[in-house]
Amino acid sequence: MIEDKNPQRTDLSQLGEFGLIDHLTKQFDIKQKSTLKSIGDDAAVIDFKKKKAVISTDLLIEGVHFDLSYMPLKHLGYKAVVVNLSDIYAMNAVPTQITVSIAVSNRFPLEALEELFDGIALATKIYNVDVVGGDTTSSQKGMIISITAIGEADEKELVYRNGAKENDLLVVTGDIGSAYMGLQVLEREKQVFQVNPNNQPDLDAYTYLIERQLKPEARKDIKELLAQLEVKPTSMIDISDGLSSEIMHICKQSNVGCNLFEEKLPLDPQLINVCEEFNIDSTTVAINGGEDYELLFTIKLEDFDKIKANPNFTVIGHMVNEKEGMHLITRANTKIALKAKGWNALKE
Ligand code: ADP
Ligand code: MG
Image (tube, rainbow, N blue to C red):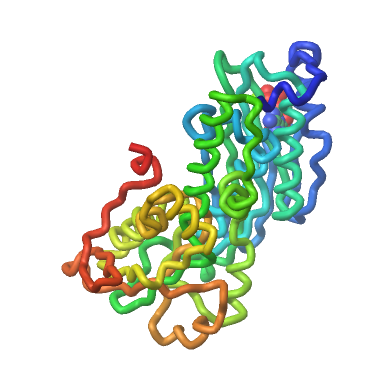
């Protein structure tokens, strides 16, 4: 669907490997002082002076992590960057550079890669990071993208998954579950389209959900906001696989348990409506859906007053002794053990 939109198709072989790299990367400029050497040499050189370097990488495979029949390539490029930056923010660090590696089959013309790189470039502008390298190669089938994000932080600023303590409050930014339901809407429309290609979907009621799925944003605002409020989280993680599994990561690494309260879960009204339409329980979606790229963190109980009035934050639970385990407390006040289903399991 996507590829046919663009009538011009320049075969990648016309440019050759170096011509292609040059063409795709010439739009990237340098924004960070720490970037001493960027694209063009055998390796990039970065100087963080007294700061610590924070590094994270992700691999995205067509057909496994993305579906080009409803994911425009520009959005894919944008999202591939954002999901990596989210991991850097989850360390309470600031992303500064990325590398971009791609493998593509000859099914993709130059114009497709231009769209992908336009999305990458847009994300680097919005998030103020430099593209300092990467690799470009061919694949037998489909597209593979691997992005590595690099960031910096003072050592004392860094927040790990393993610092949560008993009685700490569990806090989430933004709202959750919407990206997963956005995917359900897109999957449904794809099936409708396959049956009848003339059927133009009306997606007005789902714009927020679809945007959360196709154009997620990472929480670049939270580090500064917490610093202003003088709150340092005791542990932090980003929500990529789903709330439940991220809570379990924090609990296992911190040797604590957790009580999560159903009535506290921050849900967008559009999510609640679409869950009714699909006849899916919105709590299940909020807990097991993924790809929200919000931040989940714990704070000391005494810091509650500093965050309670801020609309970016919702306290959704608290940490308990490890022996008590990890539970969801429902609206009916029953206790259900948390399970790490991850978002894929929801499809079964
Ligand atoms: P090498 O042979 O050392 O692997 P390449 O010819 O692959 O070098 O790459 C040349 C330069 O272009 C390097 O600086 C590399 O980091 C950069 N580069 C290659 N592919 C990409 C890409 N997809 N995105 C950004 N930079 C890239
Ligand atoms: Mg190379």
